[in-house]
Length: 407
Ligand SMILES: [Fe+2]
Image (cartoon, rainbow, N blue to C red; front, side, top):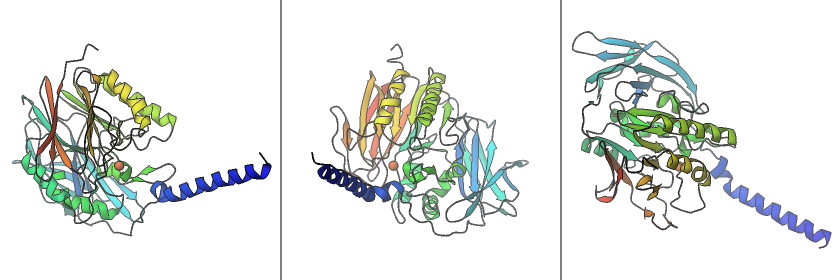
């Protein structure tokens, strides 16, 4: 081949690559701007999260202003009130500064109701309450949903209110990430306008999704995220606060950050962390939640990193239920240990993407935002999928806890 032909081919290839990168630049690296804002001078974004021991520990976080001040949580009782000092930190975002606080509550009594308010400087919140789960329930329930990513004026506020009303017996809500549309103050405000009073009373477990990150070659989690959702510090060394596990009497739920895995070192650290968590959950129900699904609703080639790394691990250690999001469609498939792991992809968002290319044996439903109840006792876990718009049951699956423990 003549030299000038080779040069033309090389230039054409480079031009093709350049055009492709240009077309994807915004999707990969483009962050929407964050307008300047001032944090409210009153406590807001009050959020209840569980400690590692779900039955006895809670953390309450809130935001108030943009400079630190003496802050506390007051447990309001029939007799004397108990005052707990709060830790504070100022976070710089692209649009402003926020002072976040958190107070940790230990040794809470199963079955007891606690009323509290938070204060920063001379201002304080309204009184909120939460009820600790009782120990002697014959079965337990939690609610799961995938990506929310609502935009201002959407329906998620109605959906949250309905779930809270219909399932007062749920121990907690779990979300597989992308709770907020983008990491800017306006969307945080909107999210809290839809769920504010609920989040102060019902523990929320959420994973991180790509929409919780600022885009770049090495994406970084929104600096507000860890101080808004304060989880136990039992996560992977590279992901404290965005990976964690929570223990209930008969269940361990493990949550890990699937978006911030940019290199082999991080991948290995997450792998070792999950492996150790699974070993420590021996004999319990094992539930794993993260954002990017192992098996894709949209294309079989997607998500090979998760599939090739974490699926063999979860299968080896007998995970029962895997909760995933990201793809704005519903999919259920079942692994190789008899009736589990059950892999779920779901979303509860106005934003829906087409579902296509399902593998044989995979149940796929597109265009139907859903919520899910997860009910379990000593031996069985029942996962039910409901259309959030009309509460119709669209799918269900039952998992046996001990069926394959001899694998
Ligand atoms: Fe996502």
